[in-house]
Structure formats: structure tokens, C-alpha cells
Length: 75
Image (cartoon, rainbow, N blue to C red; front, top):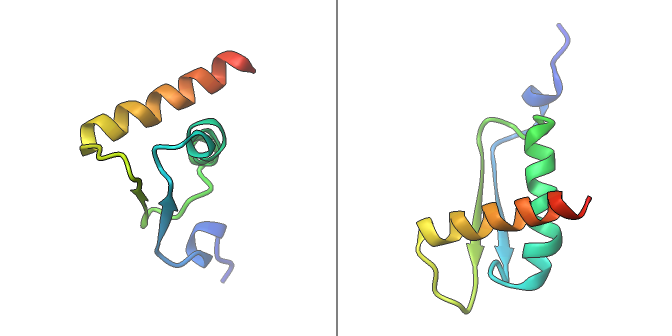
């Protein structure tokens, strides 16, 4: 029996250090979004961000969304 690519990837958590910084905003978050659009993640995928700047989950989601939208405008 053949397995699709989703079945080969074990569940995992991606930890992002510096999640409120420029690298995350300009590169990491747009790349994660692009991978998600292409459905390149297992359904048991989560990511956790750590930063010196305290952000609530809701504020972090807005920050992530804005970084993706700004990236799309540039391309």
C-alpha cells in the first residue's frame, strides 16, 4: 500500500524564537503560510513562537496575518 506524503510526516511542533522580530515577519511567517496553502503540513502540526515582546494569542495572530498580507503586496 502506498502512503501519501501526509502519512509519512509525524506530528510535530515548530518552535520559532524571535517570533516578534523582523526575520519572522518578513521571511518565516510568509513561508509558513505558503507551505500551508500548498498543504505541505501534516494535520498534526503546530507552531509556538517565543519573543521578548509580550503578545497575546490574538495579537500574535494579527501580527502573523499582517506579515503575510504585506508579503503578498510586495510580490
